[in-house]
Image 1 (tube, rainbow, N blue to C red):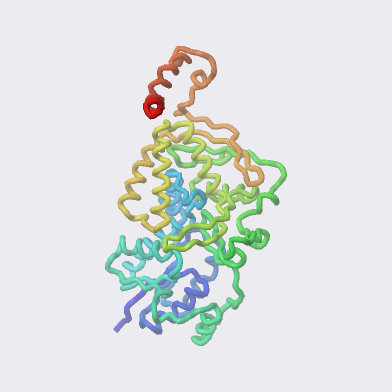
Image 2 (image 1 turned 90 degrees about the horizontal axis):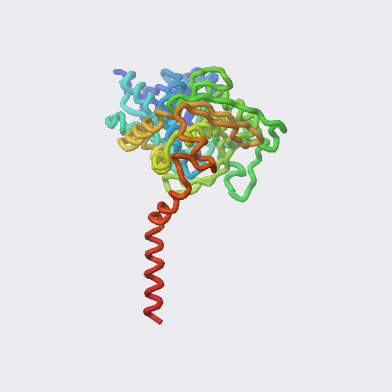
Length: 408
């Protein structure tokens, strides 16, 4: 009789390598590893061999980079969604897609459970599990770090366990930054970052670029085009979204763009400190906003600001597949129908400096905005507007004056 199967969200790191024999020993499952490629690049090298060497029956490596860029990154960019004014959600919106693919593989393999290695202190446990619950409520979820059978308390204990199972590792017990990487960003936690009083050691920490003070002394101009909120070209070269992000990563990394040091509020109730590198994403979001402010009216821009905050909160909390997030996206898609045009800017030592924006749907009228009086706008008209606009404040002040007189 064949064994039941579990699909493991596999990264190839020490935790998920140790989880393979642990699942077989404690649950008697056949383990199907699944690594979802969202742009980790060299981190995927040798993964299939490592998984099978550790006892997995199969190892899927599934490239979803374009789906990630088109269906997860771009809706978030269009929404101008940034968590707590800084974090561009690089890990947050990758997790629901990973959860979706894990469910697909579980269905294909006839698995009864999905396992992940996210800790009980972080946000990722919510993001994985809410995605699975939304798409496959019948599947069992095994969260190792919350499982009473998981007794490991250090990297050394995990390494010793693997070696006891005959798994020879290239890992050692030295501790380094905890990182998460995809095409959009790379995050860094641990070491000196665990104390907010410490300055980040950027010389050792940065992967995608350089610190602003190490960037070239000469700025570089970049020109982008958009159609309905979606980027179409960089410096005259048309590309798909994923390649545009790669090119912006190269340019942004070179000029020290998109490095943030943040103490954020995790969903589970604690604060955590991390450094995020998002060079291409920072440029893309700024360019999109630069075009939006030219073509969207005041009320829409104001309301969209509130939408962006809520959209970011939902994504951060792992609620990608909830009706509200989907409904907000529908609103955002409507607002971006006219976000079409050309954006030019200069990259210089961590800064993105405007250098001109044009759009066939611009709401900017040079003749109207100038100081010259024209047929469409007479300066004298402002008098009546100000009187009506300020009437509540004036009435309140007048009545306060009257009350003061009566009380004297």
